[in-house]
Image (cartoon, rainbow, N blue to C red; front, side, top):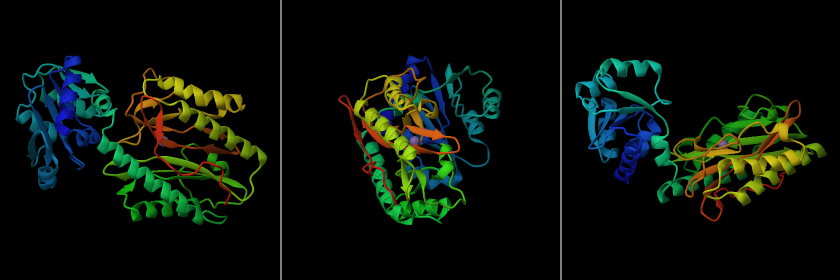
Length: 357
Ligand SMILES: [Mn+2]
């Protein structure tokens, strides 16, 4: 499994003329070796690969890490150990993950490997991670099912007088009760005018009658994330609010109906965006339609107006149009979908008809 993944990374490296690649992103290292800990470095050359971590992970790395040489360090840093073992000497052009290391770490690399010619890279491991295998899809599917169930149950807790934070705490509790390792990200509960902030974290604000409440949450199974958003009404909401809800719901459905592998990501974004524009709300849809989902909550592909890539069958993406009206509130509806050649499969089952509590 992981061996095959490293082979695919080597293929990408050859295409880019790299003799070696330093992988420093922990989700990437997990994907390529199976390691789930918090400190590691992976160096891949065309002939070998070396995994480095520290003594806290001796046992864990022994159990988890497959397909590469394991090096446990004691005192010095990961890069220093790599230098001491001459893991990069004479390797030729060496790539590092430019959006994963700090400038300070880059300076350490330059100091420790003065003879090595470094090349800034992006998207090498990301490209290999784009298409999910059956086990990965199964984990995302399970995480999505748990979040569906949590949505259904948390509805009982949403009523006037309850704070957003209480709702968020309940979601987090239910995720774990149903077997998730943790929340995928800090839960968003945005009621009333706070709904106009797309990424409003849950606050001490009390939910009131007549408000929309947007819930955006997800959980983690075997490292894989779910990400779902629903907006519900508490008491009677205005007809304007209901109309906005309908436009967002239609836009989301039209995008789901159109989504398939091999289409341009920006074309999918445009389908939802045009529907919202026709509803007169175009200027209030101020983010991209969705993003890839996997070991990271936000990974490639980006499904945005600016994207220059085609979607791939076997990718899992979110479809999450939203409308955010200042001093009024917001609506967002989000599902996770698995793309295939003919269309897509929606991994969430939570209802999207407007629920009034
Ligand atoms: Mn999302």
